[in-house]
Image (cartoon, rainbow, N blue to C red; front, side, top):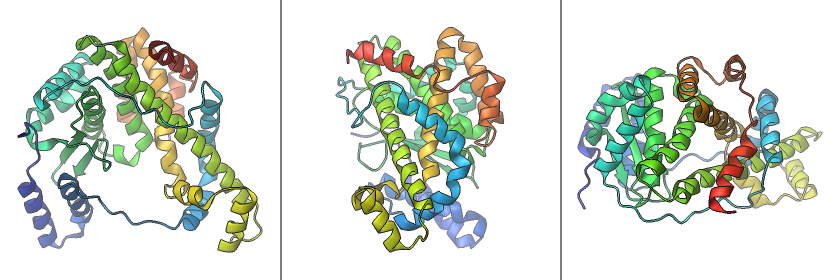
Length: 351
């Protein structure tokens, strides 16, 4: 079926070739982004350079002290509510939403959130058929944006699911677009950027449920699925931190010393390689952002304008370095509402 929204590959090729022919180093990052984007649109897996888990462990051990404030929040989160051995993989009701349906609904949703959010992307959505693509679902991406900084263009990819997640993921990714246009440095502050997107998807799910008059279970499945993924990763953060602490206690840090440490601590080589394929700092991005999003969610339910004004402040003035100070300004305590959030979802889903 011909897609309503698709990104012109010929344009991407011409842009990439122009950057390459210029031989100017300022285009290097954009060339990499364009190559990755082209490969994704063609359905190819983007190969990323793999770092040795031993080297990643060594790097994480150096960075760990700077993440202790974040780690305390992860421990609190893990102490609250249920334990999820595996992330929930929900079965959604089939709902056919065309590309145009999704964009129009997203436009209406952001319009209801106020001028700051809507007008930040009104021009973008007006030309969305050139900048957005709903691709056949695969294991390569669950939605993303690709920024070409030298032309100030943002290309949005979202999976063409035949259920409500096609819309909820689009709302999530469009919030990233809003972040970029209001704070071009947002990509350097992943906690801030994910806070806004996760929050918007949370309230977006509630909005979708009412707008499309769905069984509440449909949107709660999506919210609970994301929650269980975050919970699983939080448990991995604790496990990785334990490994780092054991590593720091070693007298020597040779590979053989690390291997013996893993044996002594009953950690499989498979888990070690999987866990340290991702930097520890990256594990925290969704964790802290998600905890903030939950608190904003309950503020929103009481006072919509106030919650959205807090988020606007976070988007414009927040950074991963000052986030705790910014939360203190609004007396927001992380994980204060986590159990309530889980209970609300569990009640709807009868689990």
